[in-house]
Length: 600
Image 1 (spheres, one colour):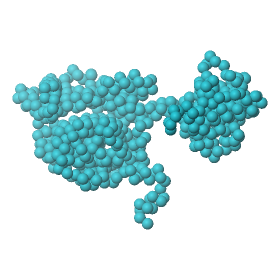
Image 2: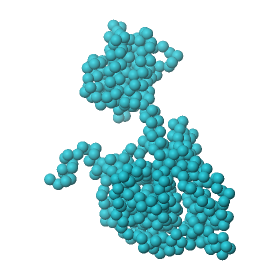
Image 3: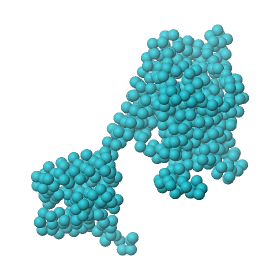
Image 4: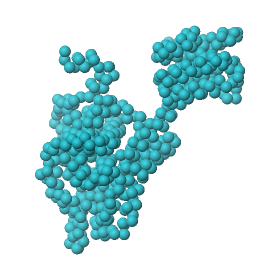
């Protein structure tokens, strides 16, 4: 028996679908139908992205507090390796603002120096990559939808502010001790602004003005790269005037090579929380970016395949001196907008990045550190979307609360903690909202339709209440359901409740036990419960757990798909029979009879 047959025969269907949805080497499908036209389109897009990826790699390494080679090699390696395992052209992997600042925040909390960070990054990447590959096989991609967009907006906004505040020291040439929180960095920076190095500040201002002018008058050119080239002249001018400024170190291209991460279980324990936060953030970024771009192109995205490719890309970065990779919004959008047609564009981006590293790496040493800080700040500013923040705050109180908690926690906690606080808040509020089933009292109208009973009206039959339940009846809603039905029972005239479950979903053990306790409580008080409109899956659960026997099969009425009110009419007649009342003449609306001749 082959492994595939063995796997298919021994694995549950749901799990098989998850495993088989991930292709271990999807690039072969791209290569099979690749032609010169696709190569030209991908190469053109890749060239545009590579011109942006080079300065971004420098900037992200600087944000993370790592040697700049980590950002450059990370961009190239993630592009090449990620392309081999990606399922689409919509996610270009590489370092991002979010993963860079989260890396910095995680290590600041531990008090690690730059040298210690550089030594631990390979092991951190192994953990991150392993978590992401596991997440792909565990179908985490489908669970991302339960994380509110407000979490991402709040996290990215607070991360952007932290990036900007962190770069003030490089913009002004002041010495600021490392701090893990936004409040700590801000307070430490403000008290030292009096020692600003004015030559450094002048280079920063000149680079910023150059970039803004280029973006205004020559928007189609690689403005970030051109602004950094111009900054070399500003740095040389400052040195000629007797006010030298700090330069970036040259990229040690000779250091590129395979390096096996050292496994240390004590360090793994220390890095686990940061690795989980990085893996989680990268999954969120890749999923949101990929789905957005795919939807715009009218295509679908296999999120788990993209998560898998990110995991393999991070494992590759651990071997070749890269830094944590995620789905880059800037590079992904630029690639698609530039006409990329396959995932080969990412591979070409990586190869072009290697060419630029080995060709221009030695020239990086002429770029002022202040100029790169300007690039970082502009990149961070672009992450603050005022319109998205307004939408989130104005949409619902829940969204506003999640945003405020996520963004506000960045003042007091490191960002790896912040993202967990935001995600936990989002899930708790979601469960709270999902755990509120809607209970509405219904009556039959003269036309035979069910309609909500207005609070000012009285029941036509005071002893009988028809309670319509709509929503999820999982464990979070069980107690609330029980309490709401008991409130209906407060009416002393009430003898029987007809519980209409046509639109009730996701019953579980907690809901069944709550209904069982409710039935027993009502009987002790001389009252009864009848169920109407129950769908087949609801009936099966109630039958397996014995609830049907407890209520009585004669008091359990299944839905009638062709006539949604018929089962409730029958339940009402059953209630009148129990009470010994004369059955009311209830006309039932039949939607099938109201259709035009020949319809359906």
